[in-house]
Image: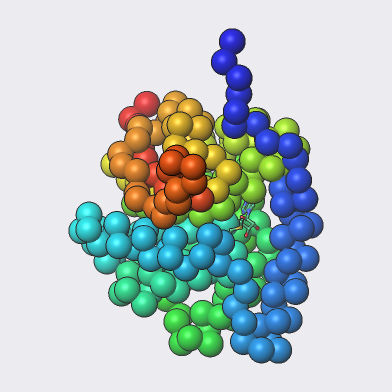
Length: 219
Ligand SMILES: C[S@@+](CC[C@H](N)C(=O)[O-])C[C@H]1O[C@@H](n2cnc3c(N)ncnc32)[C@H](O)[C@@H]1O
């Protein structure tokens, strides 16, 4: 039997309470000093994805949803690059409050924000999108109690959110390419690995994050 290397022990990062508290603090920090808070895996991880979208000539009016948007920094970077059909969602009301405030201060009024639990049946109320983007959200779900079941629900819900021929782009620090492929292969096929920063140690090349673009399968 092959060992399931994708199982992680539950952590506080897999709870809504953790994110609500984190974004409540970030709302205060933002009001006090204009700091928008943490951008997971650094701004360069966003820039790489946007570079990839441009390389693949993804049209600027393609519908794009950022799943588990946090402070919404990815959407604002897409907005700065003239993408016009943008939605952000998160299960933390505080995340959406923060993201809306930052966007409004940047005079950006064309992003739609929704509070939604991506593991719930309500996901279908969001509609469908050409591109679903996830940076760190599948990672957080992998840290929930009962994560194996939760990850399966997430994969199925993301499949329902994507238009036929649409793409799912995920950046993870907890799962490698093979583990992501294993989690998503029932509903998606690997389209391309998006190059990420590598480091070398003892002659071996490693990565801190993995970004993969998957194509929706027709089932
Ligand atoms: C690691 S943070 C990443 C935030 C943002 N994507 C970024 O790259 O900066 C994970 C995000 O996923 C959200 N999240 C976790 N589980 C969720 C769920 N079931 N439904 C919706 N959002 C969820 C959290 O509230 C948090 O904002």
